[in-house]
Length: 372
Image 1 (spheres, one colour):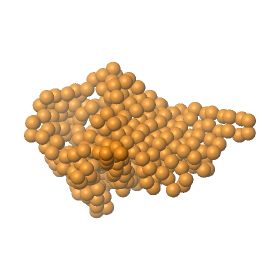
Image 2: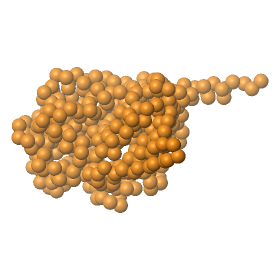
Image 3: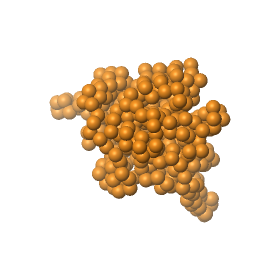
Image 4: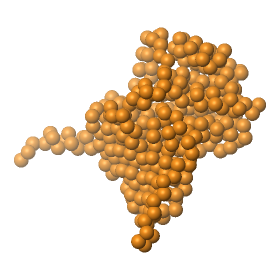
C-alpha cells in the first residue's frame, strides 16, 4: 500500500461538507478521496464535481465493492453505520465511523466480530477525545490525587446557528421517499433492540444520548473511568434536556447535564476537582474549524493560588484524529477509540434510561396514590 490511502466516503451531508471534506482536502499527502456515496444523486454529482472525484455512487454496497477503495469514512445516518462498518471490514477495508458507532449491543457485537476477523482497522470518531487540550487534561487529572467531584456539561444551541453564518451546505430534495421510510423504520427497530419496552417512551432521549451525549460520556469515561451506578437521573422538555449524577467507586460523584435550545452559544466543559487543584477542559463548536479547545489547570499551595490557561494548538481535532487514523493504517499505530471502547457508551445509555424510567415511575405512583 502507498503511504497515501485511497479513501471512500459514505454520506455527504452537513458534517462531511463543513468538516471532513475540507480537512481531507488539506491532507492530500495522506489521503486521496477516491470515491463518494450518498442517497441523494444531486449531492453526489455536486460534491464529485467540487472535489474532482470521478467514482460516484448512490449505494453504499457499490462503494464498498470498489476495489480501488482502501479505507472508508462512514458519515451517513446512524441507522446505517453498523451495516457499512461491517461491510467494509468484511472486505478487509479500513474504516472510520463517526459517532455513534451504532445504536445497540447486537450491532456492536457484529462490528467487533467483523473487526476481529478482518485485516482492516476500525476507528470511531470521538474527535473531542483527540483534542490536545483534552489529552493533556487527562494527564493532568491523574496528578490530582483524590478526586472530590466532577462535572460534565454540554448545553448548546442548534448546529444550524453556527453553520449558516460560516459555511454553505448543499442540500437536494431528490432522496427517494422509500429511503426516508427505511431510515425511520431502521431507527425504531434499532432503538427497540436497545431498550425493549422502553423504546417508544425514550426514543428521542436515547437518540440525543447517542448523538450529542456520546461525545461527553465517552470523554468522561476516558478521564474518570466507568461509573459504578447512576444515583439519580431526570429528563424534561420532551427529553431534550437531561441531568444525572454518576457514582464512582473511588469515592466521588460526577454531575452530567446536557440539552439543546435555541441560544447562540456552545457551553461544553469537563471539570475534575481534586483536593488542591482542578482540571477543566472547555470545548467550542466543531462546526467552526480552528476554534481552540482550552485547558485550565488550577493549584492551591498554602496561600498561593495559581491558574494556568493552556491552548496547545489551533489545529482542529478532526485533523488530528484523521492523522492518527492514517498512522494506524500506514504504520500500525494504536487506536484508542475502538469498537470495544464505543460499546461502553451503550452501557451508559442503558444505565441512564433505566434510572430515568425508575424515577418517572416513582413520580407516577406517588401522583396516583390517594392523599390521606
